[in-house]
Image (cartoon, rainbow, N blue to C red):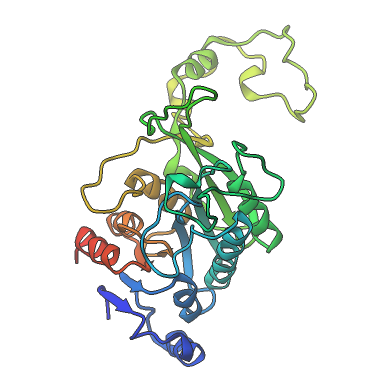
Length: 331
């Protein structure tokens, strides 16, 4: 079967071994499908080493109540939240191919600000965590990143997603937040990464400096502390030694991504922009590969995968979001 929504009734977590064996021996893993069930149960059904790439953004801690039993993000403490996510992503580790990539979008929470959503657990509707004072930034992204690294993941990149149109904040005693983290994690030291697929144009000033030439007497002509070789742009050369024909117009993508949020008309309030998912998929998944999102939401990852000639598997606990995602992606 290709496409559609599979429910927990069709995939029984009590028969994990039998169903996993069926999937592992089937001629083709079901793709372009949404599993309407708990993400940990759904991942347990998938066979080992079967997924090329994961792009996901789990519910942020204590930010929203999605009104679904078993949801992640409403735990009594940040430690419980980190533990639950670590368990989910440890199961992802099993199903990811050895050359697979995992792109994790996550943001932070302030201690004592649980009142922004419905009650987490405490009577006074505030977040409390060991070692944090009220108004402290908890450090959720790095707590999770270190937990995953300790579990065996390779922590390869901390990418900053910078938003020029962030949500406004009325605070007067700190700067307004305008970025989130995207961690690139991998299962192995060597993995699929198509850097040219996301390469960006070089700055015009770089081309001008290369064409202008460089004398032999400047402070960067020799090795400097922290660099084993002289940078190419600082090596002595005559003016005109570089021309447009031998200057690459592209450079490796930097780790600050300036991507604005975009409006989504459906009844989901935390959809990340398609360009974010597209960038991760282009770099981290080969064509016709399989991209999974265990927190599928409105289906942005699946939509991007389909448009880029990749296959997708979505997992979403909320049945209404599954319906929205299916309508959005189509087919």
